[in-house]
Image (cartoon, rainbow, N blue to C red):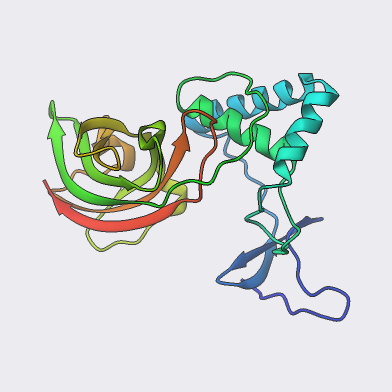
Length: 239
């Protein structure tokens, strides 16, 4: 993991050049050989790729006027990747694809109309309990808080989850996506949600009485398809 040393010509680098990829971790720039994967992908990865290809085709099918409207709205959205400059923003294409993927994740895949990005409310989840249903499906129960929103029920939670042996760390490549379902809400801003993991023992190849769970969770706006930046949570539980 060699670190990139800034110089007079280039103070920072990102993306890929030739067979070298530059990336950032904890505010520092590193470089590595560009990976050349040979694994064709899991079924879930192939399905995700298919959605992305349909999003690209949908973008190409838009009229120039509609694409320009997306670009106008995108100028209001700050980028989360370098260069981290105040004037840096995402493209109209990025904004469109984000909405397309969001709706697809919600099971409502369609070509979205140009829409402004709205700020998300502050949010967090707290782990409540875990139980096994029908001997093979795990139900993870969380308390979700989404404040400062006129209609917090418009937001669905997406959890990127990994179960590991007690005390083990997270492997980002083994996180799996699960969309929340509503349980009995405590209130509009503070409600109980469930993540259902079918055949949980086979997902990570573990059958244990106790687990450590790592989750990266975010909100998806069911009205716009947009997603916000994820939070992280790790905890342990017994069955």
